[in-house]
Length: 88
Image (cartoon, rainbow, N blue to C red):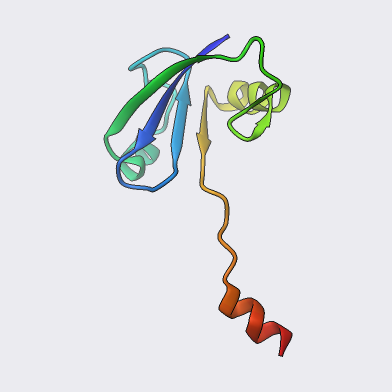
């Protein structure tokens, strides 16, 4: 299976995966507004991969099929200051 991958120019480390290049018909308009102008990165073939977009291939495909797209958000950054305050 092939997926087109786009990078957000508004949100750092945020990627959008769609089934066909330049076809955002399955992506809600509100999400596209928040995501901003999509910058094409690549078309990826996940057939021979074990993981993709930080997930197992099976889980990625399940989530993709539920919505018709997949949005990869950056990992949550731990606040070292907050962690220090909680330890006190």
